[in-house]
Image (cartoon, rainbow, N blue to C red; front, side):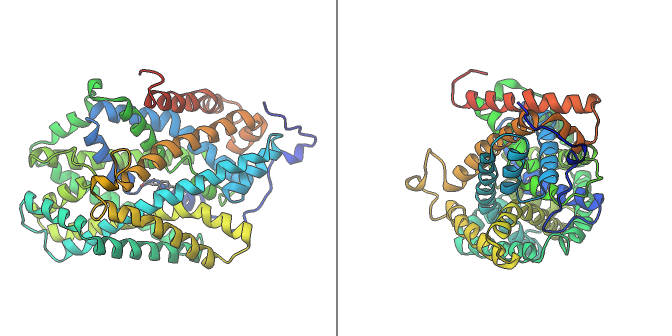
Length: 468
Ligand code: PFF
């Protein structure tokens, strides 16, 4: 399909420059992409959707999706971003033309920007919960109380829409402030120290959960597959989450790739990010499920899971108040580094297309997201009743389901088709720097066949066209 005619050797290597500056080093890029990948998806979402979908078999499908589908797409997004060196919409347009195809590929970039807005609208509200819990645990209100009290505190928190609105607003303001300042200042420095701190705190929690007496039950729950518990919907949720957790399918990584120095190896970087992200999610699961089992809690209780289980652990450990406060601070930071990834493609697009200043672009984009977020704020209180639900789900559930499980996988599928089929091998192998060895061949076939077909099958199964 590739129709790019290389008339001169020297046009093979792209020599475009990013308009927004570059990452200062390869480490900075790895940290930024890891910062975008590791977030609420790993610590809040992964445990609760695993609980809702029966454990082991779900985790297995998720892991296969992460490595066979997510990883090659992550590499494709980085390579396309670096080759285009523009915002995702312009990059898709440029590459579409340059590779002898159509400039209409730009719509794929726009699709990603819409997905990012939708995801950030609820992401910010949940990040707000984490922020509220910094203060709830810091005040000692959750120390030494029973699991039931902790659970009813969470219920009361959700019912208080003014508080949810306040924290959602606060989180969006901080996000707007940071992205308004630019790529390098602040962001790079923050992730450098926050990511390792979050990891260490999870290890401390792991020690606690090992002492609950139910650690092995938790391990079994996470790793013993029982395929009877898997519905066609579970497949689509596992696949959607693989995209969500790696931040792929919407151009976030493409936007980050645009700032990546030319000599950095894309393969090694992508593998490092996928391992770090998977490790953190599995660690979170290993912390949560033994606590759930030991306290007779319900692992399938939905989005409140970590807010109802982790405070139980903290309330029983020495220095629990301190650790709890620290944990929710770090979780809020992890959410912030992801929120930045969710909004950066839109910002880069607005700045390049309308020549607005970064600050103005950040303000306008954040206001749009803030308004959309009201739907999620009210989903847990004023609009929780059936009369406000569509397809039997709240506004929050619908936005999450549609953006994460439909928009991201479809976006990822087309990104994969573009990198695998539309781009010339000479361009992709030049960008990946693998030559034509087995690593390149694996990437090509995963991108051409495995990733697109996997998404297609899961979608067809979801809509009942085929039976898994
Ligand atoms: N990967 C993030 C998480 O797991 O929390 C969510 C996310 C961030 C998705 C950035 C998409 C994105 F562009």
